[in-house]
Length: 113
Image (cartoon, rainbow, N blue to C red):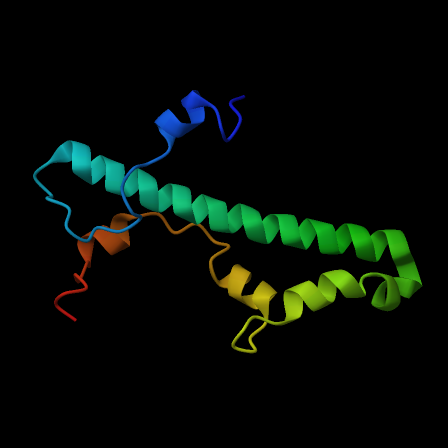
């Protein structure tokens, strides 16, 4: 398995942003690169939510009735973002992988809105 710094990893990493903004739909290579980038970004967000959920579950299971006291460092890290919203709830919004078809068919460019 390639490490994040390896040449294999960097070669597979998408070089386009995860959006259809500026993509020519007649250029199959650019379209496929945008699709792959969008799906990859969704997987990354989903796996981040999964890792956080697993770590909280392990801590709660390990500590038992003392979990409120012992897992406080995890809760504090999760509870607030800069704007006061719950960080875990923000991760859960993106935890489901939706794909790219809806976004591709109903795309509104940023310059139009």
